[in-house]
Image (cartoon, rainbow, N blue to C red; front, side, top):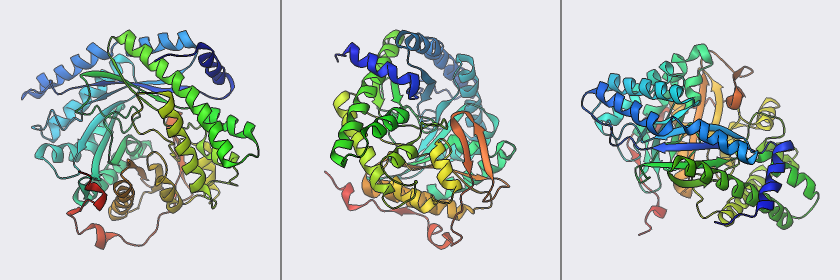
Length: 453
């Protein structure tokens, strides 16, 4: 791929005033060759392999930052879904693997390592059940480990047994980390149609079809897009879409260039660039602010979903033109706690859980970093996950739920994690019961659109 250096310089200038950064360079590492019946031996293999490939990761990424003058906010690692290579392990043995991942992440200097995961959209193995049951303890006893479970897909349908199990896991995780505002739930994602090359935590994992080692990059840039939309002024939607596409094209090119440079320094394959717009709690780095600049009085107003749909479509079109290696989820993220504009809209009562759910039908992921009252029942959480899974399955797209039933807190309270996780106002949840529906269990069959052969 050829790069215009003037184009890169133009993008570098965006970093000075528009919050542009590369959100993450994520090193994907396969652990499929690390199994041993002796968990101590297996743990040592995991630790040694992560250090072998990851010990230079932070330093090499920093060298590229200095070379181009663009910040790489996060340097992270994802691994094979742990339930796959260690399917023979029990609860306690999985916890030893989690502690090994945490220790290895600390040793190589990264903030998060993702892949304490299972893929159970169609059913469970014994090992997957053991891993899922271990998640609350794993997230409570580690600092850097992130977990995800895929419970649905367009091809398989929706595994309601898995959803009910995950609702209980979320409640337990909230309680076990109650002394830290239930932060364990902020490191736990429930997916439908999870992708294998997602570089963003907490939902990243190194898919089984991926190379032995690979480097994936996730870009950012809401602040850059916000300034471009403001500068465009009162123009029609066709012109506005072109403005957004031109902006995304430039930041995608810069992101891929830097990702390829990091991969080359590692001597490994470059995987994909995920072109998702990922907000931060910083002022001016908000998806919500972009929607308001497009003419919405505040997020939650009529027209919000249409504005987000146009933004998401423009991001995807520009990314596809800018790169031959687009992957991940690619679109616009709308996490509440990580977006200052979303936080304000919730605090003012303008944005409800129901409106957020509607917005997830047209954005990149789903209900992300949503804090709800700590007494929200497991059946209600299961119903929320089922609704979001249905959106993903019917529309053949990735959706997810990262929900925090903040232990001991209620509407009007806030959880505050600092950094990129930000803070989240506790959102009200319907008190109508889902128990009779979710307790049926089994699997909701795959939709008609699954029959694509």
